[in-house]
Amino acid sequence: MEEKPIKTEVKQRLLNLQSWLKKQDIDGALIVQKTDLYYFCGTDQDAHLWVPQEGNPLLMVRKSIHRARKDSPLQDIIPLNSLSILPDYVKPGKRLGLELDVLPARNYLLYQRLFEGVELVDVSHIIRSIRMIKSPYEVEMVRKAAQLADELHKSIPEFLTRASTEIELSAMADEFYRRRGHPGITRMRGFNMESVYGHIIAGGAGTLPGNSPGPTAGTGPGPFLSQGSGNNPINPNEPVMVDYSSNFNGYISDQARIYSIGRIAPELERAHDVMLMIQDRIIKEARPGKRAEELYRIAVEIAERHGLRDVFMGHPEPVPFVAHGVGLELDEWPLIGRDSPHIMEEGMVLALEPKCIFPGKGVVGVENTFLVAETGLEKINSYPDNIIVC
Image 1 (cartoon, rainbow, N blue to C red):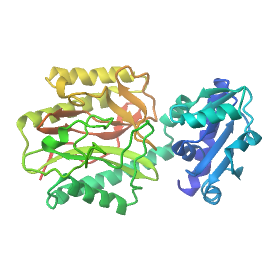
Image 2 (image 1 turned 45 degrees about the vertical axis):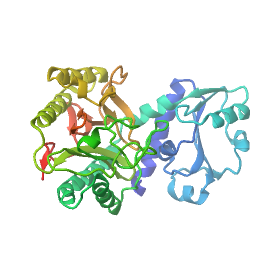
Image 3 (image 1 turned 30 degrees about the vertical axis):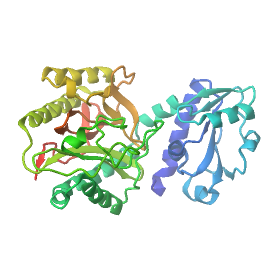
Image 4 (image 1 turned 180 degrees about the vertical axis):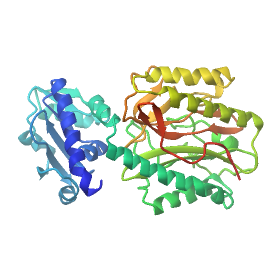
């Protein structure tokens, strides 16, 4: 984070957390996941952050105490040489909150022993709800990430003239981002979910299903990572999907565009137009107060009306969502999907990605990052959504 806003950002986030803890009758939260640590105290060091329901938080650092004191605006930062001494500093009362969606079972069992007689409760839903609504500072970071993504896509047509395979195009895009400050990783919260930049996939090879939690996968470099670019050729008249997340100061913008060397099949062009139609409809409908599951139903109905239900959002196993939150992680809330509990609120930031996967032919569709505003979705990316023919 930049030095100026970090104090006010962290202070407000901690106050929000303490307010939630009070409402839920939780005496305090012990935070250990790196992204949550960064969000609430401004450092990603190996540490435990104790946030009592009232009073000052305490950051206990295993490594590196020097870096934590340099990065974090918190006043109370101490070394933690052993987890066994946590009870000397953490006084949870009756109920202790933990990030049970990501906490390893080994740690949970240790905390059970250390805090005998204390009820351990899940606060991951509280943390994710707080992080779901972005501050003006966070929105500005996402905007800067989106500008970086737009710059990349302006360069893709030139890269395509030099790349003969997916992996070559991917290497050029990766270098472009790294030279401009991208950290080289895209953090995800879900267990066993991982991503570097995203997917660059071409033609029929790009339609191969894999371990990606999203609608597309591709061959990847091998069975050890069955998603993303492989050594597949980029052929004329086939869609090339560049679905890469950019990053500025840790904040993510997710964007996808379709390119081709010569025009692609009319069937795929028509499907791409329908995906833009879905995007336009969701932009108008996603006002504050709208249920996310209703937005998903609208997207599915449009795809079905145009005969695309079987290829919409994945094939042969479609994913049950059309948009996901972005922020410090790629899989934040809200989720616009089947049975989603979320309701649109101002300040949410999400990536809307209507896509179609035609087995053996290619992927079409679009992805953009949006801010939920009073009148609907405000598009943060600016690069054209149409298929770019090179």
